[in-house]
Structure formats: C-alpha cells, structure tokens
Length: 135
Image: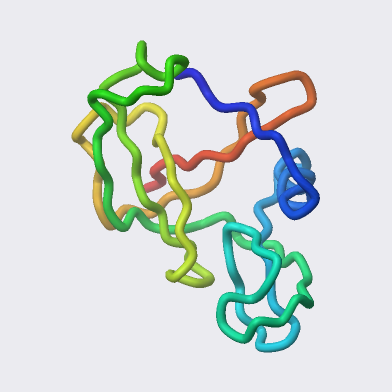
C-alpha cells in the first residue's frame, strides 16, 4: 500500500525524529501532566505551552474502523478498498492514531483487539508508524 511521506514542521519534528528511532512519543504537558496527540502549540486541557515528549509503550487497542472505497488521494486509489482503524493508546485511551493494519483484509478488522506499533521505511532515512494486530 502506498504510504504518505511526512513533512515535519517545527511542532511535529520531535515526533518524527522519534519515529525514525523506532520510538512512539506524544506530547506531555508539564503544567497539568496531560498527554496529547497530535502535537499542538498549547495544551488542550490547561492551555500551557510547556511540554516534554513522553515515550509510550507502543501498545493499544482497536476502537473502531471504516473502509475507504472511493478516496481521492491518487497514490492510494490502487489500494482501495482499504481499512482505516482507530487505535487508542493503552497509556491514554483518549489518544487516537489511525492505522491501516497491514495484512488485515478490508472489512475484517477485529474491534477491541490488541495492537502494537510497527515502523516502515517510506523514503531513505524516513520511517512512518502503523499498527499490527497482536495475539
């Protein structure tokens, strides 16, 4: 499946640098100790702009999913239909990631199943994260 190549900005660069080291990190507000993803300039709970990057276990569960049948992104059209699962992070179920779940046939997503992060090279020196079902 064709993957998007990230273009980090100042806000997301620490996230993508960690991904390239095969680590999954999220912002953690030092004002109220709240984790958040995707990266934002201010805490979604207290408004602080003071953050640290916190490493996660890279484990989660499938909350829900949908199947893309008629997406418009040209690089992904040949892969249709494909799954887009919503993964909740075990450390904080309020943090969600999207996943394609490589190897899972369309419409056959085990909602509630445990998943773990995996890393895939999409360009020289650039990894991206996805998720796989674990038993």
